Image (cartoon, rainbow, N blue to C red; front, side):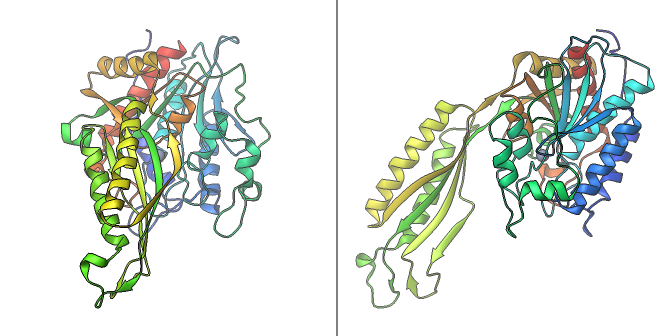
Length: 414
Ligand SMILES: [Zn+2]
């Protein structure tokens, strides 16, 4: 491969990250740039201006996804793309998503600096509403691109104030006309996404690069446990139907079910609602969420089966009723072997220590993987913390990740 000696400008990339982080900056050093707000518009305007300065052709699709294209020399070649998101959580950080978008821009700037033309066109993508904090579902833009959601469905989604995605896109000037999912010249030849790890594995191993082989499958459930409200004093222990006791044992069961699927099994109860939630009333009803994750769909099948059996058992033991409703399912995602190999080869060419990792979180890349060969590169973030204003990463890791992205894209774009 030609140009293996090429390197991105780490200082320029870092400066752009810090500049973008000023838009929606929070007092504690984080970023609040929620999808389709004025801050999102300002962030999009900034990224679009940088892309145009770099000579890229910017188009916007009918759900607000932004695509910035650098032409290739072969008119028949399909584009090689990269990207991520610039919307954040209400108390988000500077790097989640933003790193992937600006690393892609830095790849383009680097190629411009050296006057390098690629055979295939290159694109940087900004996906709409990855975070899902204001509008559900999460990863809305990439999901629509992959055909999982229809554009009409996406535009009809409303926030807590009743404002619709379509109206808010029009208001901020990002309701485009380009057909969602259509790429000029045909679909992508490859898609790479650079992202902070958002977990502690790389930092723990002391490695700058994670070669992401795929993402954990996820199944989310809502559970309702029903007992009987009764007075905390006069009701003897043996005669209670305590929904909280049942729920407590069920939470413990979720933990054990995940431990049985080490190292990739995950089981989390993150939300719990107790009724009537009074100090001296035995709870008659408890609602809680269950989030199960695993590397394979078979592993998830085992976890779900165990969950269903054990919840019914515990309900019987504690004289309560239980109802389980599945609300979300993401199948386990295995990235394209050739794209994963390109990321690994790039790290090796750069002499960067690396390990294979799986993503515990969802990413736009997981949806894009349904319609294009896809790979991801992770860099560590401090203490593995993300979705937090203190989210941080080291400049040398940011630079290393962007260099891996550069070489992986060049390998595929020729
Ligand atoms: Zn992200």
